[in-house]
Image (cartoon, rainbow over all chains, first blue to last red):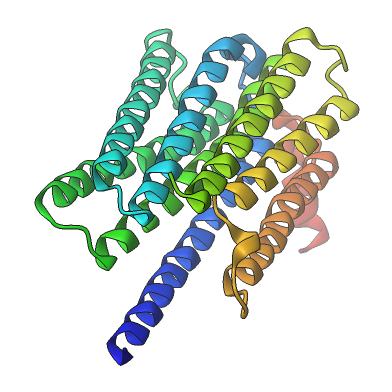
Length: 194
Length: 120
């Protein structure tokens, strides 16, 4: 009984610690958003936001990431109800959707660079690549995390530790989707409409 | 399927559909430029983004089911406060600088000489 209590306590502390890390991560994104908003008109004679962005492309990315966030939440839910196999399938779908999102982002980046609109072209593009690239880097880390979680889940019987690990990944992934909402709105939609 | 699992699933599906609707609404407003591209457009889009953030926090991150003491909720609200200070403060300061330092590049040298004569 006493072991149980310490275990739930440890679980809460770990989640809270990870949560606080996410809060500091929000501050990184806040600074990058501030930089982007300050520099958005500093195009140095190059193309502006409305000439570069494709709203349909960004919408596709949004739908993919939102769906992956949804399947990720359901995955943690299934594990909480003891359905490990269902949880693993959903986690795999999450990772595949995350990979698709990343592939789209890399496509966009390479296209921009190939057209000569790299991060060296203007203050606006530096801010754009830093902001969106930082989000993409988080997604990449999340993908590695998801795959290693899948290997771990495949090898291990379900236990309280597994529940915590999948729960933390779900927190991270939901957080990335929330950041993307603001990227979608402030970078892409504002850019397309401007 | 147990009752509680079904309830939680319903909650996730509700959150997912609401988030999708909000995304598509924002996209539609931007593409059709139904609200133009001025202050109102920016305001409405930020409200839509804020709503979607709230939906995801409540339905996916389960902040409303947190037990006391609500450390996660407190830290989350505090982070938003700091975020607004950083973002609004940066934009405010940089806009002011931009406005007050409108000197053509070729005149910067004259300006500096003039300041140097005055003594800093």
